[in-house]
Amino acid sequence: MGMLGRRTKSGGRSGILSTAGVAAILALAALTGCTDSSSGPDDAATDGAQLVSVTPAGGATGIAPTTAVRIEFDRPMADGTEDGCLLHAGGIEGPPVDGDWTWSEDHSVLTFTPHGPLADHTDHALHLGGGILDAAGHHVDFDGHGMQMGGVHLESGMMGGGMMGDGSHGGGLWEGPDGGLGWMFDFRTGS
Image 1 (cartoon, helix red, strand yellow):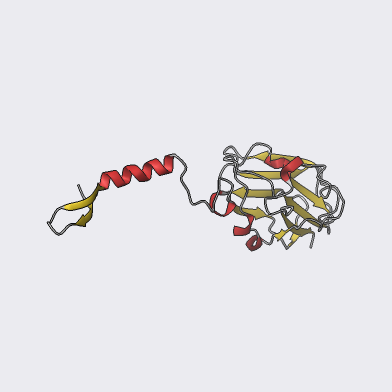
Image 2 (cartoon, helix red, strand yellow):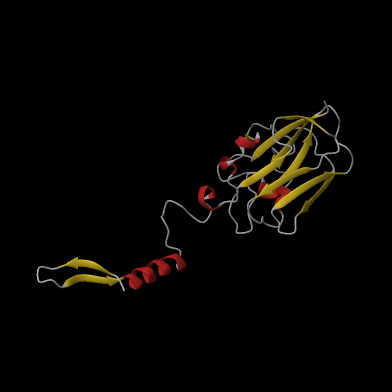
């Protein structure tokens, strides 16, 4: 078994700690939640779910009006996350599109299926609230991949006093820990 310590002038060891002892201390620290005080249980940069894909991607054009919207995360998401997601017709301040949100079996893929075809030759905006959580209660880390997927971070005040501006849908799921209102992924139907 390896030993850690320093040799004294007489050849003995001082401050001896076995490798097993170091491992036991590290395991105890992990079990008791000892962490760097600069990160907490809600530190999205280290703990939060990541977006894997958004379909259609932000900025996409020529999208078929019968296309379903699909959001994939790298882990299971909290129940009710779909309440912090909305598809708007005509842009971010437009009315919500009627349809159904459904989860994959593992709760990591959320799909929106509109009740009818989306309005053709029209801008649409998928809004993912900044307060949505993964199954462990951590905020989503949109900063990691949101912009790469064509997303735009929504600052408070960008949406006026419309439906999302007053928080009348989705409860506390719209405002994120940074005070922003989540992310928007816009696309246009038609050719």
